Image (cartoon, rainbow, N blue to C red; front, side):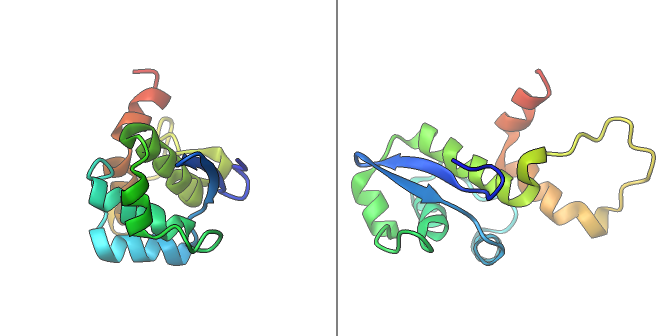
Length: 129
């Protein structure tokens, strides 16, 4: 696991794999699922994980992940973490407290909505709630 490079280890079928979302991968996910993919839908998470594994582990296709069926919730959380690292790096999701500049919804709204919808559980955990 390397938060600086956005690489997250995932355990599937008794083996460890490196999951990483490049800008191309993020773009592909948004084109397929919009800004709010359902990571708890097995079909969706398998496709998204295969996209993130493709560069380092091309053998881990959507079908292979579905066949191996890793535990859904821990797997979805690992994928979610890797996506967050791809967007925010080691700093994590920005905190809007103390913000003095008015937010430009058009300029930053799409990615913020994507992350907010993608990871409501993470946002609650990181805010102490």
